[in-house]
Image 1 (cartoon, rainbow, N blue to C red):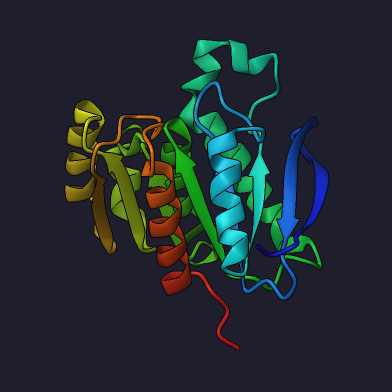
Image 2: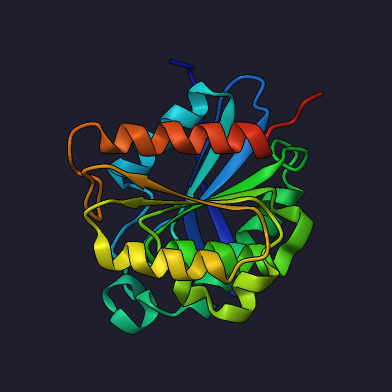
Amino acid sequence: MNIRMEELQRIEINGLMLEGLLAMPPGARGLVLFAHGSGSSRHSPRNNFVAQVLCDHGMGSLLMDLLRPEEDTDPAARFDIALLTERLVAATRWLRKQPLTRHLPLGYFGASTGAAAALRAAAQLGPLVHAVVSRGGRPDLAGTAALAKVACPTLLLVGSLDTEVLALNRQAARQMQAQVQLTVVPGATHLFEEPGTLEAVARHAAQWFEAHCIRTH
């Protein structure tokens, strides 16, 4: 297991201070910005687990709270994809200005509604985003126009028992023009709580980012 440098970052976005945990392994070759789903945060044990696996593969991570605690109790804010996207874009531009991260290829890891924000941000930012991974995501909430504009390779991970979300992901994949792969994790429900399923998510994500979001020189 790589020993990683961890620092709590406070990022000002439109007058609000939002917090994120930046973790960097020695000699990081890529960087993944996590967009959490509704009701989750940078403290999410699932996303922290995935971030540690990415660290072991030489990738840094920023686990970002896109909503303030008081906003996260408001269902309207949780599903405000435009707001989440705006803040994700702002966090991305912040990372592009930091000496430690500005030179690294950047990818997004989005869960649930965070996946919709990740895809919409990727559509907006174009070549700044090298890859997207969605875990149990709602890519349909990104909207047809945004899905068609995503240019980077996208991996959609869905549990085989999460049937409604699986159908929505299949529909979204058909609307995308970029390289897209839908991978079904056997025996997994929406939160990937079943034994071995989160490990499968982390393994698939690491392979995807290694293929598409790693500095090679």
